[in-house]
Image 1 (cartoon, helix red, strand yellow):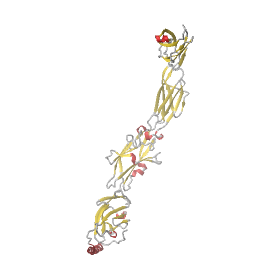
Image 2 (cartoon, rainbow, N blue to C red):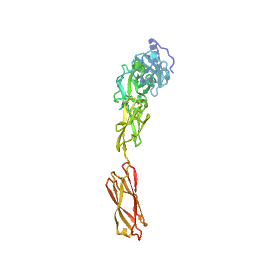
Image 3 (cartoon, helix red, strand yellow):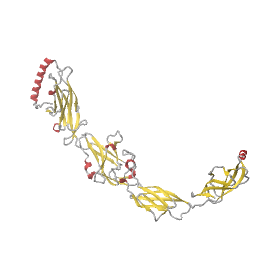
Length: 483
């Protein structure tokens, strides 16, 4: 540690230096060391500027803050007498020797300068180091203390205070998606400037005047990256915004602690009105002969922004069902998420248009459409007849396998769908050898289809009777069997 020394007058200092030189000459005669120590790595660097605030409580220098530390390394030549740690002195303004030096060895010193030592202006900095032979080095540098008393400011805020923000602008894939709604502004800091710290906290109180939340620095970027004064911050984070009045203030600090004054000034805050302009979404429409139903919801912004405080909510009293443009007037059951109504009676056969409509509490109306097919079941009028009977080949003859052509005809006015031969029985021990069911075709009105089936005839049988079964569906999808 540095020994306590008394500040000397200029005259006394000169005498003391003369005495030191005399001692050094004696030491030279004894040791032959005539080379003074070397001082290096002085911090602050010669000619540098450090900054202080108006209260002189914070100093900024190369990333450090109060207290300001003055540092230096030193060494004696190889084979020299070595540095005398007790000789090390750090002086500001020539005569102001710093006493608070918590680190002082034969290679390094660190002393602390206080507010009383560092008034604004240019300060000479002298570091004294002698070796054991009395050779003295005085390293001369200087540092400028600049008073930075003005906080950074911002301008060109976009969107401007008083703007309306629609929830349709808030859809985003992530919390840092700057393609969605963002706040842009330019930062400036009047000289002398210690350099601003663009913390860019955006405070949105929820509700206004109560609490607050921040868009942290990670959601703010330089735009473009090469422009150090223009910043964009993603504003559309659902945890920060709500429908109605939102307040916004921007916190900017410089490196000596000056803070933008409007951050804590409620009267100076920017106001934004968030309006829900996204219509409800209708889904899951279903309709049959008894019931028509559907679901609805009021969407929130997508991605990281989905939150109920950005949707006005469903106005269930507006929900309605239309069939062919006519509203179902009674019997409907409505909740906050769905509606169900009885299917009107007396609808004609055919396709009917279904529409479900509902509004949210902001007056946005959403709708969804579907269809209802009305069909009166009618069994197709099918008949079956026999065509040619023959042995398909000598092999069939030898195997007693007889082929019979059957004909199914649609005698009705509508189409018979999915006509199929499903089976046959016979007397005299005759059996059907054709696999069933045998799918055929859709038969329009008046059309017919002919197809072969095979029977296995026992020896000695000269005739037999058969019964044939079939199936088909009507236009309503109802299935029928024949006979």
